Length: 288
Image (cartoon, rainbow, N blue to C red):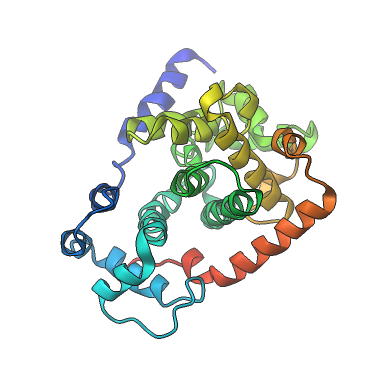
């Protein structure tokens, strides 16, 4: 590939719409532990689809509330900061994963399912392994780890067949085939996009290095390893597989560091399946 074409792909990052401003403003408000609920409500009400999704997900089996909630204010209070961040991020990210219209388009729906699955798996690992990481960073990085595919999809319609061929004929992991054909992979592009959106350094690094966590800057190694492991485990379970999961090399850094045994992994995967069963409404977010 010539350098001009590579520059065109990198430049396309700036053509991706900014992260939804209603979500950004709402996240800024709830980052203050003393935020005023009414201030948050005024922002969320600006977006009808996000308002509908907050109510829908608040009443879903995933959150398990004792009664149906019909008031946005009640929903915000019931969900609490952690769950509210998840709903806002999920609503904001869904549109991005629906964008591919070339290259990756034939499994665009699987990109979203895989993103949610990876986020839930990362939470399961975080909680049960008691890792010293912030839950919101974990959920965000996992949800956005494949967002680089949205950018690449604009350009890979011709090259996608070559990428698939390397995966299938030479048994290469998908991201390595991307590097051979394009000169870089979706993880690098995703990291650059996260930086453009001004996400924290740890989240941008985890997205960029989720296929090479050993290369992540030292302060961000653990989060990068967790996202890499979550990605690999959900692909093993067939969540958003397509060509991407045919030749995936399971990262063992975190498994080895924590001395996880086969039965530990099996127990965690059972817990993940329970989370996925309760999260169907989150996977099935639809704009109003």
